[in-house]
Image (cartoon, rainbow, N blue to C red; front, side):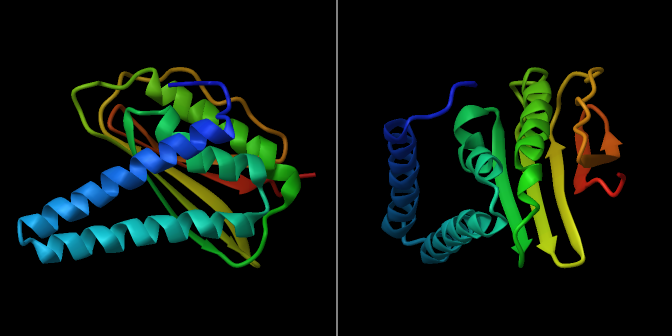
Amino acid sequence: MTDKPFSVNEALRFARHDFLNQLQLIKMNIDLARLEEAKAAIDHYTSEVKAIYELTKLNMPFTSEWLQTANWRFLGFQFNITSHIEIPCNESLDEQIYNVLDQATNLLHNQLDPFVEQQLHIHIISIPSEFRITFEATGQWESIAQEISCEPQVTLTHECKTTKKWRFHIEESKEG
């Protein structure tokens, strides 16, 4: 895990590395005459790219950058981002949401069982009637006693927090 921001050069190097790995997987499936698997891989990577492009609609540069680079900084997780974004988010929430995502992922990452596959799914809804980010981790880790620091403009609603699943929602605070 790295805490420092990526330079443009480093981000491009990671992106090219990921792209080459994806191409190699597709090529391997084609070489093995597994055309359905190759098509499925192309569909999977296409949907990942669309989800990343959709993040620009949020108008939240810190959070978008965190979401786009988290898989490079937290290598213990398989990341998945899905979204339904129709409108931009309240831009004043950007740094606070970034802080919550980073704190939660750091807390969890430090407790991971290295012999178990860890999944982290982030789902974003930003529509006129609702703004919510759902953080859902599944895998295996040691108990996490520390809580996430409260941010003034966001509300956290925990659904589940065990040593195998942690699911909570980040929403704009309706108070004050």
